[in-house]
Length: 232
Image (cartoon, rainbow, N blue to C red; front, side, top):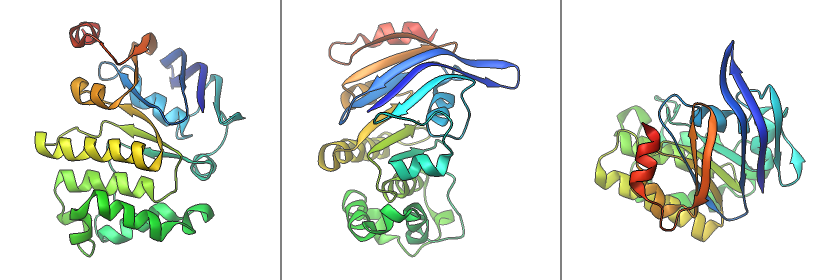
């Protein structure tokens, strides 16, 4: 479904990603682990068109999207859910969700998608008329995930969904991602620091350090200590 091949990415003169390759198959959940500042978020932004690859190729369902603009990549079915959330604080929960359904394909399914979002996040239905500035961190994360779903994606790129959340709210978010994958058949590439939560969700993992992929393997039987050791 998604193939990243030998991608290099720079910020000015800083070489952030170096010869990065990975694959994600239809219906998979793949987790990307690595220390902070070593290229995880940059890789997601490069895939979704928010940052340009200097070299290498990115293909989605057989189409080269390396140089495609971000709005075209969304229309093709890839939704990026950033760590920073980027909500519109004075707009209501409902209005923020509807902002995700701006592309033509998504408009046709917005009612169905909104019902699904309210099903997995009942709290958003309760707060649909509240400005997002009044929400907790966990509720804001729900809105960010929901807005991504409103674009009618076939793949989600999820950046640090648990950051800053309480253990109970973290469980809500990870349970929702599992349900999204299982019920909507949406493929997920997730960047996450909470290793154990992500391992329960993912089928495969990649480890990135200093902008390079260290290893790829099945999530079954992965030694958490080995991953933690690779961080340091």
